Image 1: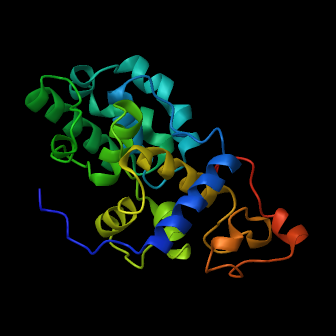
Image 2 (image 1 turned 90 degrees about the vertical axis):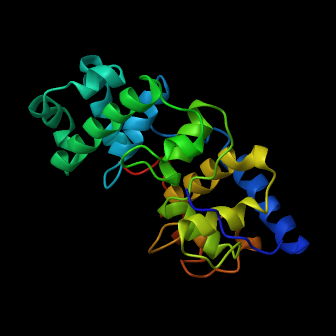
Image 3 (image 1 turned 135 degrees about the vertical axis):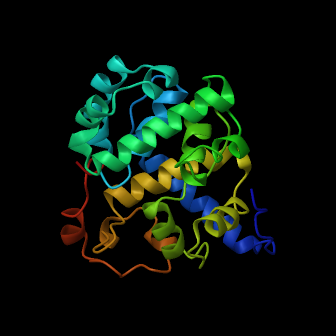
Length: 238
């Protein structure tokens, strides 16, 4: 695995502002958590892979039947392709996703004795698993701090002025320097929840944003409180 790029330490004013934003987001979203349902590390790994190009809600709906049929890596690695395709079909890209699950499960069986590894350097050796997926699994299934740089997270941290980087690995490194490691997993949840509910890609609800006063991008969306409040969602995307 290539070494992470080296960057200079951030200035203290940026650190203070970023941590204040995180504290306010934590107060705003006290129930923030991973919105994918899972019972164990293998389930979380699989549903995270399946969540690409679809919604968490759809993945959650498909999850019970999938794991009732194939509850562990050995069972899934031996699954008939046709049946697996039927189970993941509602999620789109079912052939590609079925191939990913078969390869992923086989690699866990062959290389890790059927157990999902709990180290990032091992997780990213699995087919279809990058740092984003690995950090989701580490932070939520193994209680190992990790920053999940999905599209919401990347968009918001650039709007917040925490970094100008666009490469997910560089974003992860830059933002990680602003916060204690112990905060990384919940930071990810806070930012992602805010991105799904208020700080939308095309029309952020700036006038109903609890961190507007610390956001250099304030004004990209409606600033009128009444108009902005109409854009606020009470839950993640369907």
